[in-house]
Length: 151
Image (cartoon, rainbow, N blue to C red; front, side, top):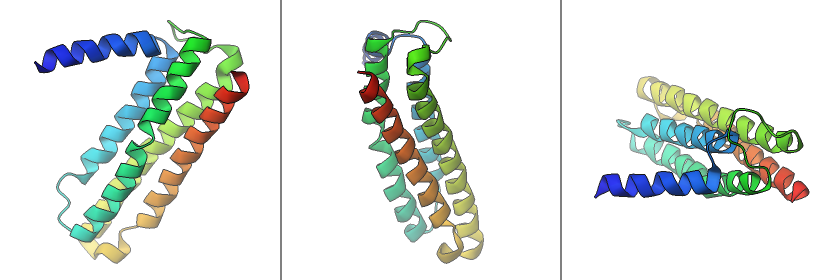
């Protein structure tokens, strides 16, 4: 039954996001979310785990917004290749920055995990993870605003 759901999901993605730059922007963001959540696996310190889970959940809440931006951009300027539609370059740039910042947040979470294991919760560097997560939110907001200006 799982493979049927995957096929339906892939078809829905093809229909809503196409197979060009908007699909890749969305997929890149979801891969960043997956990486962030993978960092959480195996954290033994409950306080650190709970703090990172809160940030991870906040970032996961952005995924529908990213999907909506990518789907909206695909409706306005469909893409089947690697060329970024010139009129929507700001949208793509903001999505790319958000995905990049998400990867940096996942990396910061991994470092926080290591520091927390070595030195304890107070030295885990959660402020850096939260700061990078805020940058992701800013990037998604910028993408939404850029798309709204065009629409």
